[in-house]
Length: 474
Image (tube, rainbow, N blue to C red; front, top):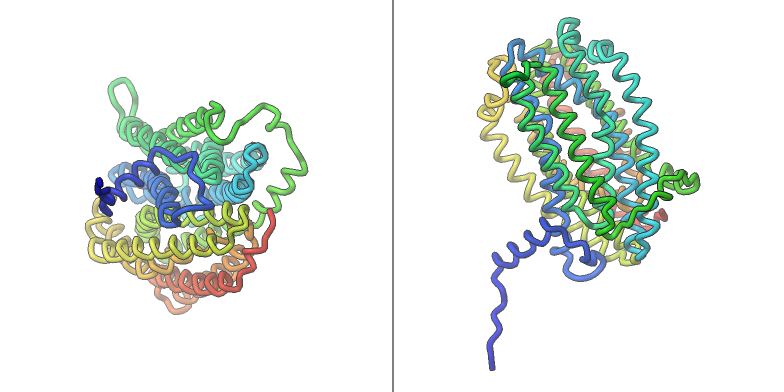
């Protein structure tokens, strides 16, 4: 009688990691081991969001070593803050696409899933065209409205114009990745961001500093590199979307507007977009408040800290996205208890991750800030901001999973109301009082962020336990 050996824990982890990076297109997320399902989705999603955060960090690193680096850093940061409105459109539509596609896949109807995804693409391109047009025309005025000085705004106008003109690549990158995630193929989403970032990392130093016959474009070169990298990533996505080998089979007729389908997607996406617009506009207000109370160096320090924070938070967001796919597919398969267990397992992993990151950022804040800028004043403000904001990391991690749960179920109104009350009626007034009334300046703004995020997480958990999200139809 031969004795079978059970694989060790390490070998099982390595096997699942390889499966997740390859992309297990045939894996059924509505049955089997929940931990394996979370890991299969989470690993590529975490790596995907890490790559999205790398875009801003690469730009920040190279422009942070230019002459007038405080202007350059401020421009990159303020432009990213404005682009969060584009991100809101992209993320809102991406969430809707993930929810609808995941629900149809859970119902074993990939044809309707594919059609819904393409209708979301039509909506995104139409809406983004309007936003990017006005962003391009009024680039200088927008930067000044955000609190940049006239010199800083003029210095950064070309950067913002290029970023706004190429913003359709941002929308498509998020949206198509949302379609892949809903279908359970998170590996393609991850690989598209890897390709986009590799291109950006290669192009950034060349276009910023020049190489051979290629002139040095300075700050503008960062915008050209980032937009080019994202566009290449979109071409990679499109190849895999249309090659007919995946679970989603795309045909030309899916691009003919189906107003009933568009209305259904907008119904889910509109509050999702509003949800992130509310959050994004609050960050814009905070950026303006820091610029007004801390000047160009205060603004540059805050933007540096914010980019670093987003680098660590986006992977956690990627992990939380696993909850959205699992909730959507399991609700579609009428597996409500399994959906709940998936959420709790994902939250557990996110807490472990964010607690680790909190310790790292508290200890290494000076070294991290010094790596991205050689301006001592900018460094000191960035260090303070990093340490204060990192105190809420564990709550950020739980809150992101809860928000993804609501969105994955198609209950996009619940997190919209949470964001409205949490950001606009709590965080912004608190930041204003601390910064201006109590004369704490940028420090008051930094403190308002973890306090508000903690309150938002508590509200999200209460509503999660009430369970309205389990009954939503999409």
